[in-house]
Length: 246
Image (cartoon, rainbow, N blue to C red; front, side):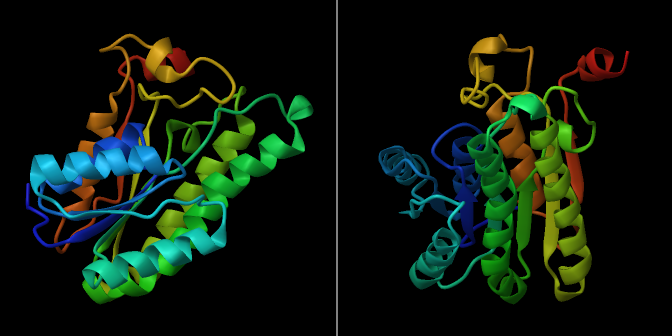
């Protein structure tokens, strides 16, 4: 796989799960990595690990992606520190959702603002720099963004939006050398889902669902394409279609 020597990457949702694994995958390929999430202490620990394991430069830019100012400040800090931006991974997201009739306003807005607004704000701030570097935007979608499920309609809708947005942005900026990729996992063994129930890392035994490192490898694959674009990568549990479509 082509390296990312001297490239600069910004990863959201970097404090755990897919984001943490992605930070390792990119740093191991030579990238400087900026880490964005709400939990500063976890980010600082991860930054120390990246610097010790890969001799990478790591920058902590904590904040909430629901706030427009967070993306503005993060991108500005990354460019000031490293001089540019080559890879952006929009990974921060929450789910799983609930019945529409019983979903509260707070639950609805939290999901919309994190999954939809956070992706938009980050993309808007990063695109000028990705055009300069002819870099790559990788958006983490979901199985739910391709196949509707009865139990998570609002979450599914946010991921359909993310997927459609990413493909439309790809059409808009492809002529300027920017690659836009979507990575769609089904269940991943992380703390995802802990907001309203049992997290996936406890619900699924090892080997029965996707591991965060597998998603990170797909993201790294997309980030290292040169002159082409990995438009969409699906990473589904092997029995997923039997479970869903039978």
